[in-house]
Amino acid sequence: MAAAAGAATRPALVLGALVAALMMLGAEAVWLDLPPTGTKCVSEEIQPNVVVVADYMLMYEAHATAHPTVAVKVTSPYGNTVHHKENATVGQFAFTTSEAGNYLACFWLDSAEKGSGVSLNLDWKIGIATKDWDSVAKKEKIEGVELELAKLEAAVESIHHNLLYLKAREAEMREVSEKTNSRVAWFSILSLGVCVVVSALQLWHLQGFFQKKKLI
Image (tube, rainbow, N blue to C red):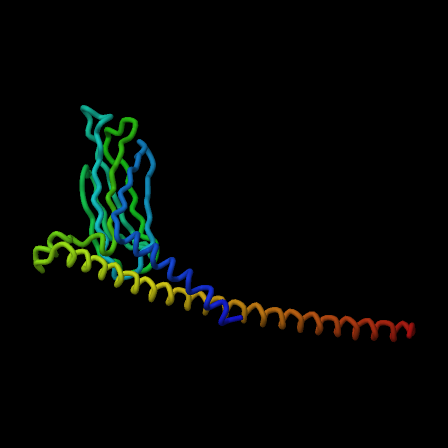
């Protein structure tokens, strides 16, 4: 059963790694409609030691005269602030992840002129998507097929790292599951033991009661 389960999880691991690698190959651009009050957030689950670069910019089509500003805060999975800026209309944040998990980027209007809200463009790049291949091509003097091979090599390396990361996560989850099952089993045995002891004490008490009343 264990071997069959392991074999069944391998395709899932490979598929997950391929999906994660494909996500890293492309930039993720999103549009956020920021309301006059409240916060809009986006999150991304990222593994450690991954480069993250994001550019954000406010759009003013609905505000010909007024120019609202935005505040942005990016936090790590453990709540550490990796970027914080106020009174911004355009900006960029870049960092290398040190923790695995969901990184959260939140935006809200912080100016007096809020109007009916504004739109914000967020261009979020992760991993090899942050790499400037034009600069790499000029520096290493490669082009055409060689450049495409370099991109494929980076993609394969990214997939390999994702596989290792997913395997480590799977091992952690398996260990937690085994510990939980062990604790549940011991708790069940303890509960059964308590029930047996209580039942024995009840029988002993009833036997003594009936003997005192000379019923038995």
